[in-house]
Length: 346
Image (cartoon, rainbow, N blue to C red; front, side):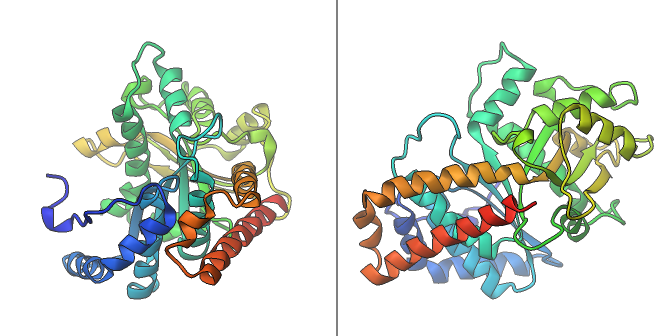
């Protein structure tokens, strides 16, 4: 089993796709969660960071994940909290009618508690697979595989002792140059399902263009400016990326840079050995781009439409007092607006 039985915590009641239910259910087993965190952390030689995988559209992934963020911040101060968050598809309508509430409430906790959040969208992952193999019959195994390979690539410097000069703190400081700019998305290329090729100077431009086109969210390059990027490329034995060459590709793709600071760029060689662990890595890049604000704006607009009608509000407030519940709603919307303003200014 991937997870030992003593690591799995659940309750008899579900959250019913409701953030507040997921939050309260997690609080009810708070001591059990704390004890599990403590035992698992004691088995580590040195705890440097925590990775949280969740969806912000449903009840458990949104509400219970917020409790996890609080616990980690309280009991492991100073440790990096790295989140991989699935958001609602940006095109069409969500199957969960209260998804806007769940998403905006979750964003408040991510905004204040997490150090880095990488966003994923199922529809975008499906498009990535279709671009690489149009005949493939897409299922959740394919989507999970793409997401897992991207995450494995990002975390490889933490898992391998051969990365003596690259660590998570250095990567994050390069990606996140200022507070509140800690929401990212990724691009991917060169994995088995998309058609794997060995890295070479000849196919480098094609790989970069594929990464720029295979984004994990539906965010347009034209709707903002690039703040920073970190590339992870399987390029054993080859020199690093020429930044001027990369900027030329960006220019051809109409990718503009922020004007208030130098755009940060980092290149990490993800091919450290011939070991089997390289099979779990891909050519990928993590981007900090102001165009991500379009996702937050849509999220806020959907929230406002429901809130204006007071639609389904009682099902959320019943878990709290009327005053506390409405304060959480208002504070969450304000946090999202702060994020929109921050990403809109560059």
